[in-house]
Image 1: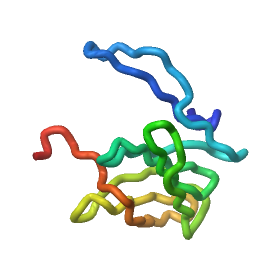
Image 2: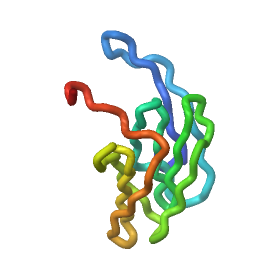
Image 3: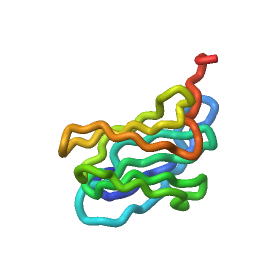
Length: 115
């Protein structure tokens, strides 16, 4: 919910049906909101907050674990883990058109079927 500056959570059952929906994280700020999202190998959520120049790492209970301030621009949009150990977070910054990189404490979540 970019415009509400929120990240929502829900449960999925075995059939893929959606359970109750609620707010996982309420971000602050008056411009933009959460945009790109990724998950690390510990189940933490990485969130690019467009308009703020910040990328957040949140724990399982929604607690902030790490804040990354973009060195260029205020519009981090998409994010993805990569690099040899999948511990580098690549951040697209829409205002300047740059790709930023940050070393993360945990690697990105594995992809099903990737070995």
